[in-house]
Image (cartoon, rainbow, N blue to C red):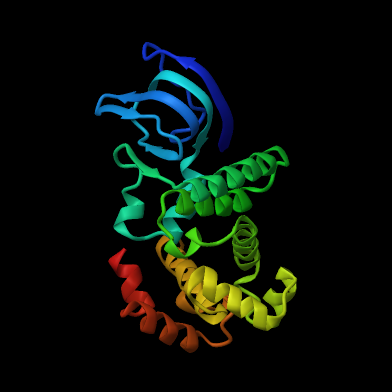
Length: 258
């Protein structure tokens, strides 16, 4: 579902670069030359991150001293799309695009990639890798402005929080629970979430619950009351009013629309 490898050497454009999975990212650490596609040739600049569409054939020309070649399945990519619903994020891989990271941003991205390699080797579960990939793409594409000023350790804390939230959002609501999971006091956790997400824990929990409700309404035949129970609402009326307040339409109307 995901493959990450270091690439280096001298390349000629007469040979296409193979990828194990359809969605691909090339992250340049040090190189000179060109990335060649039907749409044109693009300079292999240090700190440049290429987001490559599924249908494009990639050829390189020049010398790569150090770069990362990342490919992954649409299943892993779906978590990124669920977390990033704006047009810029959804169009990230529609045509070839790239972002240029400054030296500090690039250093953080390389650290995240090295850690991702270790996570892949450790055979972490799919949900964790999907969370990691979403964080990496959001950072590398400069889609989450609040992430850019975080240290590598703080970015790892963001990943840890997302993993805990993903596992327990249906059953746990208290700040104390998530603070304990993060090894922080409740006060420190709130301060960290505000810095990393510009939101507090109740807002993040609510957004995750509503996102899950949307998925259940679209992809299952569960009744509204059953969905409320799955998501840990004590009363279906509470869920129904919360959903309508968030989406502007009732859960039933939302289901009919999709």
